[in-house]
Image (cartoon, rainbow, N blue to C red; front, side):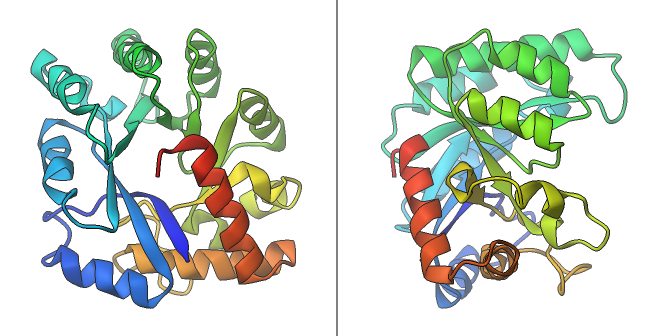
Length: 248
């Protein structure tokens, strides 16, 4: 059985979360970590935790840097001790649309890293076109976690792995002309976890359709072929990796 370590199972995207969960289980995906991004989605994460299959991540996404309020950070700190909140995230830096608010992003990111360090929580990191600053901030804190939707170079992967981070691999690896597969070929499976980022980044052959946690199965099949391992071996290794980072 597999775990989707990063998805967004919110009512905005799915009419019936239980249908999505049951579909995932039918495809061998029996655990999901639902990641919040802002005040509203963090509250929704908390509302989903009564389901056996769901664990939660609370965080403020860098794209929310202009919109979040201090009460949103207080909400994270208030609920961080819940037994099914297993990580702070999705947090990080994103310069894709520009660097005008770079300093504000870094401040928000480091505030949440400090919280993770204080409460001995792992983090799930969003980093887009901000690798150097992401690494600089991470080095300031004693944290571990996952680099969500990793798509960088082998050199960057080695830096993150040396810092104790796992790499989140999702449907991007199945995309035609994607260089990520060449990087992952060179990386030991003990440094990888599987994720979907649902409803985004749907893997081949379902591109253009809404993603969901059941598609971890397709990502797993692709990785098994790429790395020449069985599904059983991949499930065993990635589940062991998860246990090293998350309290699941």
